[in-house]
Image 1 (tube, rainbow, N blue to C red):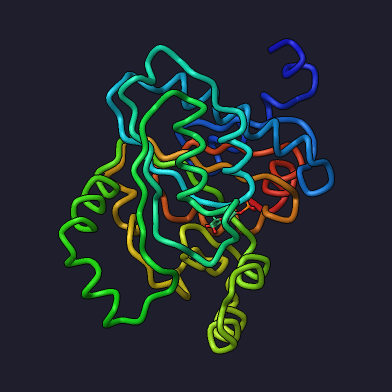
Image 2 (image 1 turned 30 degrees about the vertical axis):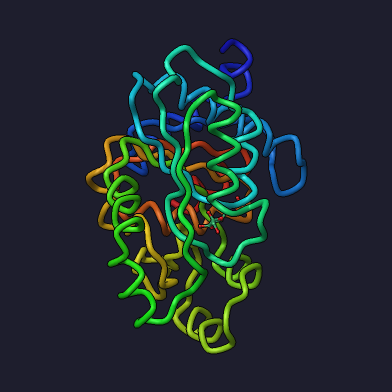
Length: 255
Ligand code: F6P
């Protein structure tokens, strides 16, 4: 805590919390765009935050991405974890297996001594396939569990980076660019006003569900994500934001 005072991180946290009207902000030092260990520190800060907020018997929905993978790495067992159920927040979004929500969810549960359930649906479904899959009894049951989670932990990405990292079709890439998307979370692409300009068709938590979830934690760092974080936070969901110094400073400049 003393180190935090000296480095001005507390001031960054307070400023962001007020400007973005968030429940809490945690800032770790450094820039995860350039130093891989900073992403690990984001993971550690998030794991600590999760443990602090758990009471037991909760369901935690987790998203995909490299930052969430770092959170999973840093999870440590806690006596309150015994009845914690980890589930993926949404179906596949075109990520590599190590960055998929299912993989991260299983890993988190293993490290935390919790339980997990997975969601097996193909990525980027057609409208017809989507409609029929959500009517499957097994899928229906797990979807209900996911959408009524007590806690959601997710990453935020730069729109272009995410569209390129996923196997996005040429038409969708064009749409994302033409509509000036700057940020992405959960398969939703946002412009700088925070409006949804494109959405990947998949099952799981929808943006509207977030408003009913008591604890939503977003973890995203690196100066390159400042615009994305700013756009996404216009959703006015009472978030906890865990970020790094470089993203925080850039964000404050933008606000
Ligand atoms: O694709 C899953 C996802 O959580 C996205 O919603 C988000 O933009 C991205 O991963 C973040 O990835 P990373 O932590 O690797 O930057």
